[in-house]
Image 1 (cartoon, rainbow, N blue to C red):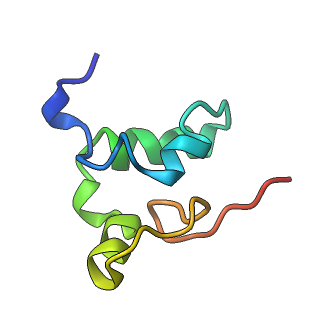
Image 2 (cartoon, rainbow, N blue to C red):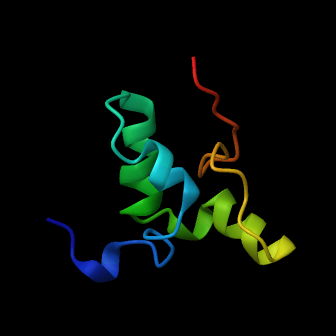
Length: 71
């Protein structure tokens, strides 16, 4: 189990996590592991978007900056 200090400070309000956090898709689980629960939090494009524009991005914007769409 991850230490609470390892989790992104936006994890409870993040639209991406709300929509995709429980997915079984391997690539998305990797984003969550590396960006939401890992060392790449500072590189998260969702956080950068919110800092630059003052609003949360679309729930479909991934932490690496790609937009994901349902199949």
